[in-house]
Image (cartoon, rainbow, N blue to C red):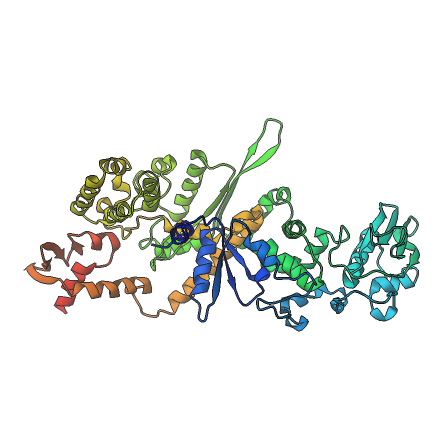
Length: 607
């Protein structure tokens, strides 16, 4: 059974004897501020475990202290002089920046080398700097024939680029649709200090449809700054990091803040970086309203590019004629054919393939989860996979009444993990956990009753509680045989949900596309792996289970009792095995589809 993030936190709490609300890990490949990752879901926890098991992995784990948050401490790694330092206090050189920090988008004339110390001289504009904005300034703002029409937004962008490049504390004295006034060093002017003399004035020229610079005092007597006011907006940050945010949508706000500081030598606030991420996603994906407005077009494109696929959309029309989104269902033809032709007799309907891996079938987006929406989804799904009333089908679900009404012939199960979690809310103790899983994994009613009686001896109320939860739906001892599905946990859809967890936070069409691409890539990858097995008739995961069973079967003694009938004994335990009918008294062979240790012992004995 896979360890969950919740269980990991409980283990940490027992280990540290304290609260563990926020847990982080860090790889030494990056600076602490950039590389620290928060663990707050099962998907994050499993990524952490996989990273820990990679060759030569060295991970540090951090927990928030009650008097100091780890993220605030990580920010202190970037010292106040504006330089970047590693964990040993050694200054990092500029040429060690990541390759992806050299995107063409973030050019600013390749970001001139910054002076980290206070400027000792007054700097004047110089054409040799090669800045387009400065060249326009020295040309008194006149646009050439090759220049595109300019507006206030273009001028503001140039001003921001110029300020960040040189570390000038510029601010807008006036900024509207007719006037633009830029000054330097706000709040530093007094009787003794007249402040920085820099001034830039621009006005809107109606005839030329552009802002033009009318006056300029191009002198500075100020020192470099690292914190900029409103001159650096979240949009400016979002535009410069849009490609990176698109490629790494899980980039944290803290990591973005560290990247901004490292690349541009400026200190952005957490709020600016958070808004920059939102702005970048909005620019890339559009607004929610725009996404929902395109669902019809998206559905038509899916049908065009995937003929015979099932794409259904349902809307609610209000009395005033307003139309609202209700449901959207997708089942691609390749997925449908793979289930019917290649997997139907080997899989459980929850999406488990012959190698015991997830097999996504269909997905549905609904406004509200209800009996009606579940029935709509189940009707479409059963039509696509040709299962009729559910004869031969096994469902592990949230016990929705719509499932039972629509597929009465199917075997309905509950997730044993959910039963256990609810059980432990009322009854604490490791012994209860141990006995519960013995009960759930029992393949015979005799074993089921044995372990339930042990629970009853410990606490009679626990026995009553479990019996009220309908053991026929979560204990293997009551499962139907000849279905080749003895699953009693809902881990398959939960694994799928953890994979698409990030996609579910995206706007509608972006989310649907993320899921579609993931499913297509997965099916292609799994098909390629299956083709590489050659003449192998037993899938690798099943072969692994059989190899473990082989080690256990050698302790059992085989006694022939008839034609292809045997009795397998170990101490006081005895089980009958019928090779002709492929049955065993323990029911494991019938429920899984492959021989368990009793049948394996018989087969090995005959060889």
